[in-house]
Length: 207
Image 1 (spheres, one colour):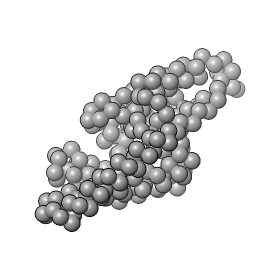
Image 2: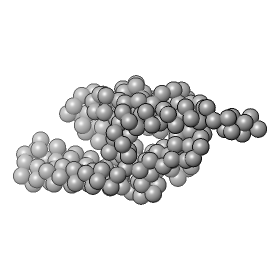
Image 3: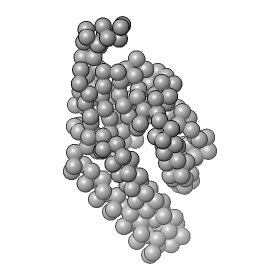
Image 4: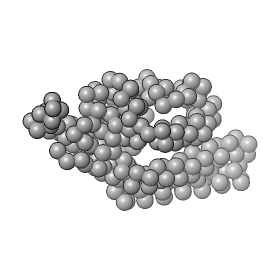
C-alpha cells in the first residue's frame, strides 16, 4: 500500500486567508470605532482570525502543506502517528460545525510518536493561543470554553476535552482536506479496509 498525503486545494487555502483577513479587518474597525464591548470583540477577532491564520499557515508550511497522511501503519496527523489499531472510528462531527473526526481507543502511541519539536510547538500554540481565546470567548459564550481554559494544560487533556465535548479526539476542518467530508470519510475507510485485506502487509507484520 502506498502512502497518501492529503493536502488542501489551493482555492481552499485562499478562502481561509481571505476569510481571516476579512474578519480581522472587521475586528480592527470595531477596535477603532466601537465602544468598550466592541473593542473587546474586535481584539478577539483580530487575535483569533489573524493569529489563527498565521499559526495555521506556518504549521502547514512546516509540513509541506500536508494535513494528513494515510499509511499502512496508521494516520499521520499533527506531527504524530495514530496506528490503525488505536483508531476506533473516523467520521463527521456535526455540532457546532461539520469537521472530519478521528476517535482513538488510546492516546499513548499517538502522543509517544510525536517528536519533542512537534509536541512543544503544539503545546505552545495551545498555551498561548487556544487557551486565551477560550478564556475570553467563554466569558461571552458560556462555561464550556472556560472549562477548557481552566483545565486543559497538556495535549492529552486537550484530546480528552475534545472527546468529551464533541465525541472525537482529533478534528480537522473540511477546508484542510482534498474532497467533501462524506467522500473523504469513505476514502479513509476504504484505505483502511485495503490495508487490513493486504496479505503482504499481514506477512510483514508477522515477520
